[in-house]
Image (spheres, rainbow, N blue to C red):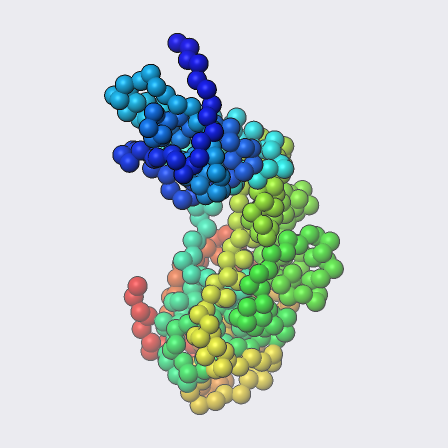
Length: 438
């Protein structure tokens, strides 16, 4: 069937939407249509009846009004019955519905670099093949990683974020919580949010770490989006705490986070998540997908730089304290950088020590290149006239009272790495507090 229709450029003000139009258009969709018209011009005519009522093109008419266009191209239908017009309205929208070929649309999107396709509603992640949920699907290698609902402190070796809530619930209330081996500040952070103590002492020998904790609390890294290269890491790791601990393997402050064979891919993944503009993130993601395909083919199921995102989430959690609550808590926070043996007890202090895990049989620990004498610490704890709490796996000294905190997957420790182990809270006095059950 052939029809000789003429295109009429009509005033948008003279066109009437069909008041019973069944196809809905939300504001976001109208904006995308407007973006398409702005980028490519008005390439699809409206279809109207003899009374200037829209049959096809309601979304395009709304987009034209959004762009303040005076006129739009229209085709007037005069040879259809009222019933046919009603059917055409519905049929036009229905027959346009279809699924996408994931592989082909992704390939097409990857070939478009100068035009931001997100303004039209396209995101590469929306066109990846979904991960299978069948029983025969490949086992997720990250299933055994504990999914944290809350993150405390900054990423740092031996961070207690996994069990901070439990430890805080067991420790007795008092005037001041003393976090004597503060490290990344997970215990201090959790304690400040709990409101269980009047004030807090956060202590650690490493001034870079305590500086990182305070800078994070004060919001220094609120807009941080640097993606650090291996060369930058080596140049800055001794002076920039953010670089040293956020961008090091296992947050140990020593080696760069990724191996040389994959670092470029991981860096591009971070750019796709962290770059300032949507356009830059999209371009980075496109390059990331290409790099992944060149390396491992078309399997896109395991793409996230998981370890890096978890580190950044920890920073964000510490910065998400409400402004007034943060200000009030900071006024009651003291920071020091002394050896634990130099600490001076004050009446009402609750003393907690996140000591390095003992290497059983050696009575010491050197997991991070710094030798810690576990037996010397145990002797010190026993000598104190006040109660001292510390957490660890099983220890060689059986003279301490203990309560099980949790069975956790050990992430560090020469004898326990990768295994599940019971973590305990130890004390030189009976532990009277009862853990709150969740």
